[in-house]
Length: 265
Image 1: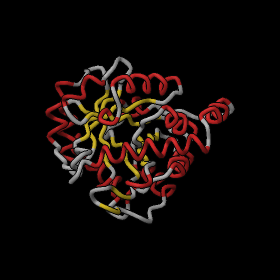
Image 2 (image 1 turned 120 degrees about the horizontal axis):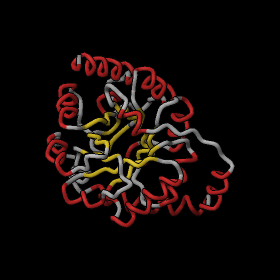
Image 3 (image 1 turned 45 degrees about the vertical axis):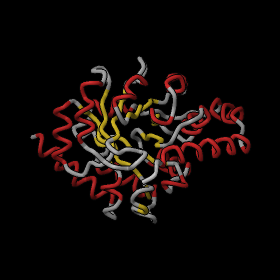
Image 4 (image 1 turned 30 degrees about the vertical axis):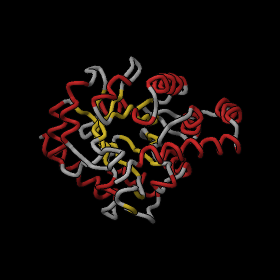
């Protein structure tokens, strides 16, 4: 498969530029100053969770196509929360993943657990959008930004009371980790080729800061893998495709969590 990450990033930069024309950053800043938005800590939720599952709302993916095209985000978010999700992740990219900012707003408005904006963040503007939509956390993808951008975006996110999950794909991206990065994720799926390798989380464990909360992302569908990753030091597990393609994400998550907890007893 062609390297789709560079295509997505190029499109995202154009998309954000157009959005800034329609609604300038200064307007977002004014709106934020007038707002009171609840915050739920993703880091604390994972540290205190028996399962550590971050359940993702994702309608489609570039590699698999539609997973659950008619899914109702409000219904799924509430079902995830009821099933015991530690936190939620909501895709807001429309062209490649079928998500919208309205999905994020509906999800954050319907649950009282941390909700992360899952997006290709390439501009500070998107952090303000996330906060105004009720998100408590955002994803920063090391492969999509420079080290300087990573530092700058992380600092601004902290000022906006947004936690940052810094996502790495290989050993060469470890230098993106700064002193403020307390949530570090390993994406088992290559965003260029979309090939999934669950061993990546295990291989990279020795390179991650001990003081951070580690999160394994993508390709997880077996509770035994969750147990092995927990034994390695991971406390968070971002899972979406497995739940969404089941047709009943909430029930699928409930059964998965029950099995994870049984394993630990």
